[in-house]
Length: 304
Image 1: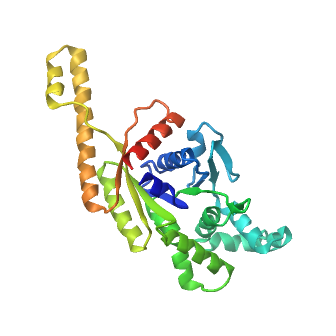
Image 2: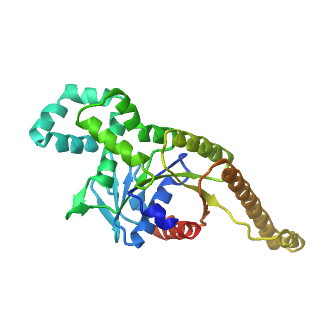
Image 3: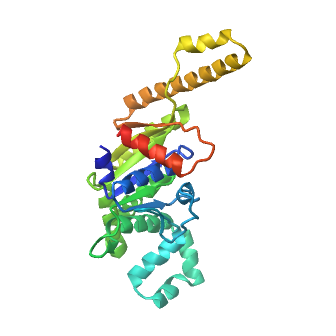
């Protein structure tokens, strides 16, 4: 299943904010790169994070290598608009006339969903159009998508646009984006959640909405999963010792309570969502860098 997931052209990672979307995006990309796939992580979130996980400076809008076969780029609306316009108009002078005058800038700022259109367009171009030496440049593109509501809006931009516009180069490109996002052989949309009530409920609602729009269902990543480590007799035995042993027992009891919560939401989500569920262990790390991403990647590969 891991090979099947990473053999797609595009893997989208979305979910409630704060559940670890960027962490999972980086880990999936690392797993793919270690399989020899030239992989690009596209971050369309407000703050770039993936390069920092690998101890690298922010990539910005220029593609940067993070490790062998692994690259990242931060997709921003203004720069994406400029790239798209130059590809369409071909000449810098025409771009400046059409897009750099104050009236055009005002219109572009006010136009609904234009930012999402050009950012999604850039991701689509990297995933299915960008060529290098006669072949597609990237074996896999991982999209660190916006959180839940905005993420759904972002992915449905081609669908909404094509209801209004049927002709022209932008409509043609929108059809290409929509075809990629709807193709289960080329695309997979994964959801990240936590073993907590609000993120779990939001994951169920998001899954329903994604299926309603026909997006191919990828794994559900249950991040921050705590596995049980102690038996109840072991926890109780610590209550009959000195202060240090009692403190250890309280810590073990707290751990088991979190483990029980993880098990509960794992069962709830398995019953509610027809997706393969991948538990991603909670990491007790003082700093969250490349070693943590390696652990997450290993856990994902083992679970898949």
